[in-house]
Image (cartoon, rainbow, N blue to C red):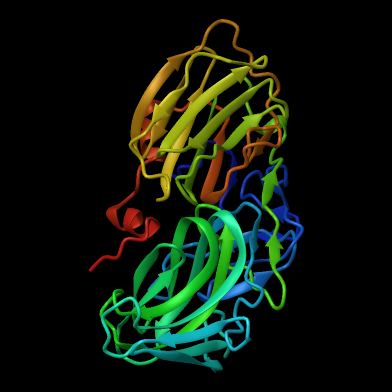
Length: 412
């Protein structure tokens, strides 16, 4: 028996075209989502390579561990971001300054030297040598300055050009020492104040490597507390528009008096924003919602006739950046929240409850605000209120291997 036997709408990311994400159920197309993003964007494809997809095309992003695809894809929804670096992958450009001092020397960059994470021969070789000095004045680094942002994040892919592991520093105002191995990795330095430069360096007080021979690809500086998917640039800053994915279903797929909304999802970051997905009548009047908030908070709530019905149910024990399974079950007397196989709580619904005519699922609060940004592996709606036992099973992992694969654990 499938866990979706009683479901009226099921979306498992698999089939799509421009402006459309197809749902598995119902088969008549009523459950398909409308997708909008008026710019190109990148994703990791089934071969584990970074590729650019056309405007309005949904991104089915595949998870990687050590450069190998580990699981089925997830729908990737991201906010609008701008890569401020004008040459994100042309490190030989004069805009990328190279400097050395003390016992160090200016680095050498060789363009188009090796195969990059996008499968092309466009990775650059970066050779750093700080010498044997151990002070802040002994350094070898490459850097690029951009317009300052109040809070920013930087990222770049790096790998060793030989069998060694090198300790290379990625720096803005603060720095992080990266263990650059023979496998491609994307290194990030997030939530940095007054971000206006990206530096890749060896320095006497950072790490243990006196020299490094590495490959680099795809640098990014963006305003925001966390890094998002790569935005290629070539001579000017480039903006990727936000993903908008909404309007799945009709009133025929939903039950106004009882039902379940379920998803397996992960947030992109534990930031201060509110991210919703909802079953609604297309207005703020009547909504069945799950909200992800800051401080690892998952909240379920029902709105009826423009007012919250009963109290919210709150779970603060789940890491929202790792895939979790969540469901809200509602009827005319109560609603309950389930997360990863556990019933978090139940709240009574008073006699004024009327859900209106529920007719769509949105990755927002139902009226175009508080968009959900994250990754979704599956989403389903049921027209009846499942039992606690059924909901525990629905939101549980079928096996340890399923949980480990889904959450990108490495099993040895």
